[in-house]
Image 1 (cartoon, rainbow, N blue to C red):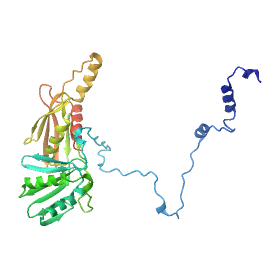
Image 2 (image 1 turned 120 degrees about the vertical axis):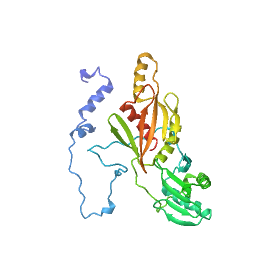
Image 3 (image 1 turned 30 degrees about the vertical axis):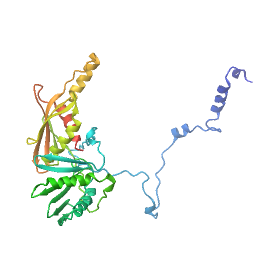
Image 4 (image 1 turned 180 degrees about the horizontal axis):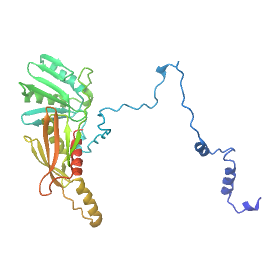
Length: 323
């Protein structure tokens, strides 16, 4: 045996022998193939092929619900709010109220709600005088029913009116009917309304102030936000719902702003003291039209106005509750 190999362990000798034949011997090193690979021409199928037998192996779905770019800029959609307000079982039923108006919010699309509404009317022996599934309208001699897309994705709103006002007894009966249904019992109707997806929030900046434009009537926005804020703004020292003003379409909240959170983090690293304090903020809604509402956030008290960064961050969170 070669004297140079006498002091080498057996494993090292085997490894050395293997390395000598790694390229062209029995043990081919494929790493070299990847390094030296060249791009080839794309595969071209003959024109006479049967097109029905071929399709994309990994198709990319079309993006829906986006709006055209403005000045070459497309803003990313808001993230879903990580709050208990979104932890709802399919088919849940809740009531919304503002003043004398009331309606139901059901966790299902209008296409699934419509056939159940027709079944509700039929079981009670009500005579239908007008029926328009595309608009979500069902009229009887006793009451007028409406189904519309909810403010949040996947929700529907149901109204029952008589003489232009809410029929409380009818609404209660509807509420019991839908509460008795399981989520799997609703079957989508191809003839029911299928509204286009709308951008739930459009942000605008005017000077140092931000505002959010929502494509819904002010009463609907206030009622839904009232419910969602009660659930989400319930953490003492971080975010709290303090007061509601239905007539003024406003809310008073305590909110630990982004700048306070960042400042508190820096302070805690230096002194281990989380001395951040929430800010008192007024969230105000204003009707811009029958189906358009603006939301603003204004600082209240000695701390003064919110910075534009804090306004934007808070409005994003609040508007995210409606997605």
